[in-house]
Image 1 (cartoon, rainbow, N blue to C red):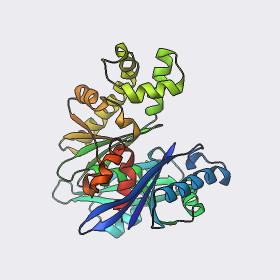
Image 2 (cartoon, rainbow, N blue to C red):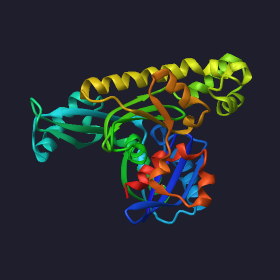
Image 3 (spheres, rainbow, N blue to C red):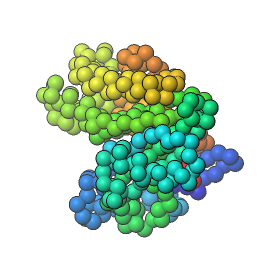
Image 4 (tube, helix red, strand yellow):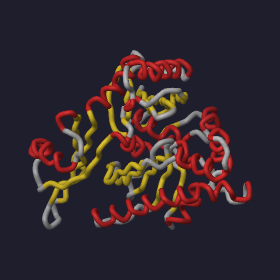
Length: 337
């Protein structure tokens, strides 16, 4: 059994998977909201206790069995960079990484956790090179997330970035895809190919910015604006198109960043552009968002189903319907094993 825990800015998502031959079977899942601040902003253990108590409650309600868990770190707190090395051996790359990292990582390496992964080797190019993914996070942020797990009396097995997890549950291996995680506080963009991340970007424009746009345009309170966003989204035929009109400038801003990411990937990798864009996260459930982005970008945009690689019992399918985009990171973490 494997458990993935996604601690978001407003909610915690959990998924437990069991091995089913060569694949996975959904054993249990659940989500719970919490009133507090995310671990990266926590000032003391009291702040972390709010999250650990919510996690304990979720564990009980979702009937999760295994205490061994994998967690993710928020993309806006992580620095991910792809760099090129000459055709060195793995051990030579490991030695060279920390020196190269100083040029690419804008936080003190002495206060950080730094990891790297060889993506692929290009031996037949001129000149030949090795593509390496660098990931760095401030040690104190990683330790806060680990502390939440410890306070919930769970056993932490592995930590990775949110986009690594989402890529595992959503991406195909045949061609490059763009994954866009539309959360509450940030929009995280990744381009994935053959199960590897080639590009990541985090924007501080997301679900809350969309809600604020409705508040400012219609002069209503945040609770009502949130409800309008979830109910009508980008549907132009509802409420005289006022909700769509309020949201459109923000959506176009996000679309432009997606376009820039595709252009950068094409230029830097000299490869084919992503054939499709997969939306995930809570805001991905907003009505007509995929259709509007498809029209703006002229690329197929779909709402991802993180359970597409997992067997789900028929009786659980309806219960998950409409909530699937929330679980992409937790499913990916559980699939790590």
